[in-house]
Length: 171
Image (cartoon, rainbow, N blue to C red; front, side, top):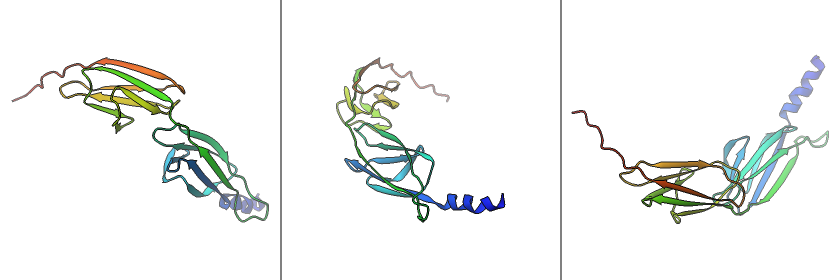
C-alpha cells in the first residue's frame, strides 16, 4: 500500500486550466455554485482534474449558460493537466413579466436591484432560474413575487397595495 502513496500525491498536485470566453464579454463566472471575482474573458488555473465541475456564466439581460466540464490529465509525462477553452454566445433573456399593480408602484426591484425600465413591463429575464420582483409605494405594504419561468414565457402579476396601518406608539 505504501507504494501507492506517491501516485496519490502526484494526482492531487496535477491541476488543470479552464479558459472562459463569452460574447458579450463581462459575464459573471460561477464555479461549483460559488461566484468568482473574475469575469469573462478569464483563465481559471489550479482546478482539479478528472472531476466534473459545474460552471455557470451569468449576465444581466441574458440567459444563464450552465455546463458540466471535466478537465483531464495531459500526456503521461505532462507536468500539468488539460487546458480547456470554452466559448459561449450568451442569448438575450427571454422571460417577460407584466406588472398590474394598483396604485402604481414608486419602486420596483428585480433580483435585489432597482429596476430602471418600464415599471409595468420587466423584460429580458433569464429562464429556468428563480427571480424575485419587489414593489413598493410610500404608505403601503411592500409586495414580493418569487417565480421561475420557461424560455419565452410572459407572466402577469396583479396586486392591489394594502395601506400600512398606523404605527403603534408606546409613550
